[in-house]
Image 1 (cartoon, protein in one colour):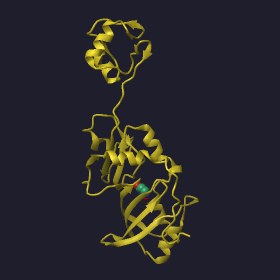
Image 2: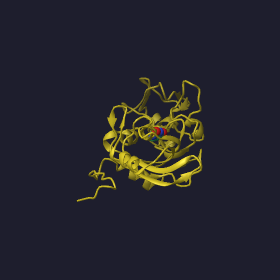
Image 3: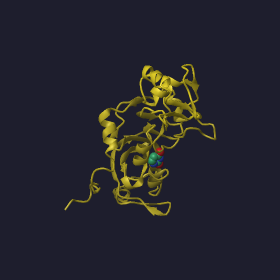
Image 4: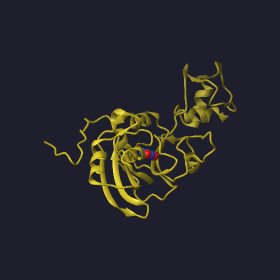
Length: 252
Ligand code: URA
């Protein structure tokens, strides 16, 4: 429950002091009744507050963050199996935010979170072909043919993946280290792409998404996106699409 003046201020109607004046002018109704006293409290969820005959609603401040998700967390708000969720890692944020898209329980790396539903819809919509780059540590034989297959598209779950960029970037104790950029977001896509080539992904980390870079953000930590990063995300879908041409094909 909050005081009516605060509620009105949260709705962007006026400052708390000016809200008091508006109340005294008999312009405010709560659940259809004109209110003139100052002590009245309202329930933000259930009470209907009108000013000059128009219902008012709180404006929630939009917040945009990136989290470096560790392995062992699910990217849902709650989990029916009782596993830790990414919400526990952002509990110091006042607003209710939620993950944009998903990362597997056993994948780490860049996860965008926000309370901006329009932006979430944009980033998640398949028509925007948002690019996502992962570092994968993989066992199995990575041959030139494997790379070409992955770049051209491989069959997983009965469909062919769209062209991807794939490069070997090193070797670790776990196996070959590759960087792979995909422009789709099917369930466990990267793992299944490598499986289709007889390889097993031992470790997977997302390092880029939609032009954002994870950089040196420590694991388990979050940071706010900068204004220019948010503006870049908001531009998704507003500019003519550049056709994605894999590196092995020359532009004509
Ligand atoms: N591909 C996967 O296999 N897992 C992820 O978490 C993301 C992409």
